[in-house]
Length: 481
Image (cartoon, rainbow, N blue to C red; front, side):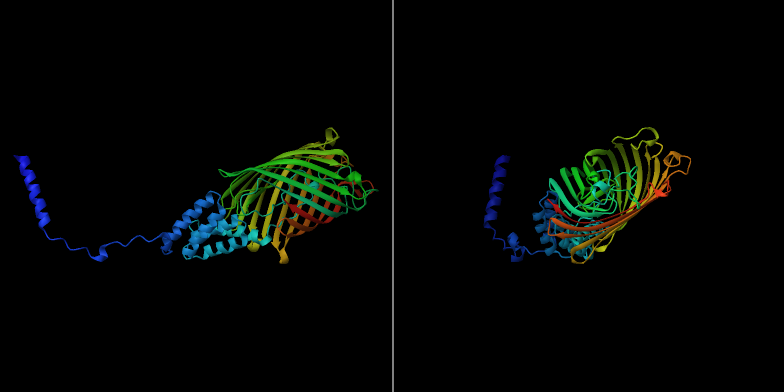
């Protein structure tokens, strides 16, 4: 039967197999060696790539210290891996190790295998590291809060922050100052003609200035967006002229999208923190409001908004486009032609160049119009230049100069002769400040500024009405918390 035949053949084959001589053993070389323990594996390209991938993942998850250790291992295994050096530099920058980050990023640019992100991106990160290492967190000098209408100043920059900002942060500043013309107000010197021929009671005076800024960060780098909310307060008091003391309080909100090599974005109303890194475009939306008091009375209420678009590159440069709008309400304002309350619209463009060692240069131009009563409605054009450079012994120098031309719209602007020429004012302002960090949280500031304003409107007797000169000098200290 077929089944019996099959069984018989299988039995015969099995017996033949048992009777056959054994096959010779395989050569020893054909037997794979046992897998070595992980700690016995030699370091090399493969190990570097594993550490690099794990380090990038840790950095994206916010485990900065673990990321730095993994990335350092990747660099040790493959010192010419420009990508590993780049990521290690970013981790060191997040940890606040700016000087080490600058050295690592410079090595990434010099590596035989260039970083995958490209030399332009690494160069931008290197500039950010050198900027942070060069000033060690120094804060550029800002004008007194009472000198700006809104509670933020465009020249007021933050202390360096290597990683994500804290949930909230603050700054408290105290300054002793000298003022050659204390009666000049933050918006306009109208009806207080304090000039070279100052009226009685408006003499040179000394005083003090107390300034507070608090900012919270409800979210940071969430889908590329970062939000800053804050308040500001200022009190400027004179030794002999209490009726000219100024008080200011206000609040602000700033929504940013994008990254920046310096770790912050600036706009017409100030700055807010963003992730350190390179992005071609970044956007900042700002809103702010403030109240200003003169002596014990209300003087000015102001609200406004602004937008700034920053375009980074080519090379170590950035272009910023600004738009701004504000509403001003003066307490006890007149009506009709003499009404100062109104609105202001402005637009501007600026070009920044980041220099080696943490220095920078910025040139800007802006223009706009202010709507008010016929006596005060005008158009303006302003050009400005700013520069900063680290000095010896931990000092950083900041310089700022600008010129503003105001051309008024109506003959009523000539208050002394309505049939005379339309009012035309020109202002020059220059300031210098030297800042030195005293440890991690204290900064010492020495500053001076000079303002010259010329006008074609004069009072009878050749006394200027809108022209004036003003010099301010001060020594201060700031505490960051």
